[in-house]
Length: 438
Image (cartoon, rainbow, N blue to C red):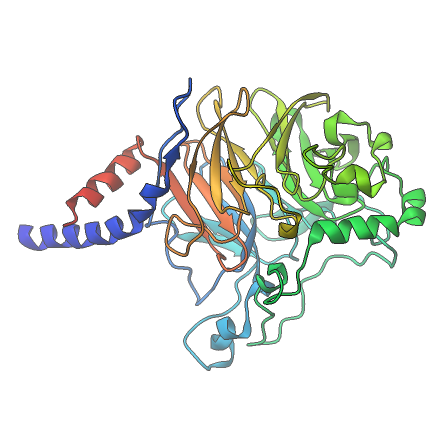
């Protein structure tokens, strides 16, 4: 029996060792006062999804107080090839609900279906806040809609605003691969969200007059949602005018305050497209595109302006504190990449002081480890690839109370992964298993 157990452990170790090939992707960026944390890919999480489900692009992660994870994803990202089980053509797969709850052991704990959107967070009372054309509050136990943040009655550019709904689903019929629209010619349409947004702004003078930057409700769609239960508030990063930070009461969902880049009052946000674009090596005067937010334990708001490849830091009231750029050394900015910038979702290390800021980089498919005090890049984890511990379309990251990092991917990644600190009990076990391999 011992021999069989030993063989089983060694066989598992071979699998783990192969999965841990991503360890070599960790790079420390020279001697610093702080050293970059070291992480390992955990191949045991999540477990295979039940019911022949296949996940779409992940556009929201919410960590509960017991360190389980809610995943908000886009079932419409799945192609017909991935939905053949719905019509009996092959064994896999079928569309899952858009909200999936995964436990610490990787098993699915629950789910519910809701309209797709972008950005999500959960509170400690059993509610989820989903970013759609506004932010809607759902009871995670039943999936029931229980409230929503007010928004204007129109779409940006005109036309009535329609209540969010689950898109019609024809069995076995999916959509185009989500990566296609981001490809540069000749293999794609040359989709450039930043250029499109700038062109759109030029045509919206009448709309801005009707709904000025100071509009105290949702106007565009949502990029990120973060709940601050300690202060009974919810922070929303909205994409109107390149990005606005809006704060609402967590109970009433009514507007409280908001600001733009560099702490500009909402009324002072520029509607001139030139103020939302880089001028040579000078960052935009306003947020450029795809804004996300994170709130540190000591009360600072970190707003990541993805297309502008920077993070700006504010007090909770919106006073600008500092800014730092996030981009790999030696890599030039290139507007052809559109909104695929280096400063995506932000999260923090789990130590009491939250010494590190973690930034998900969609353009380079890596996680940057920054000294939170001054924005110095200390190191990184990951690069583009399909193996565990690599990324393709790294959209966002979230951290639990143990310091585990959870990542969500769009494009052809379409998955969540878990990274664990190498000095944690689980990290040490994974390293031991990898060393058992021949």
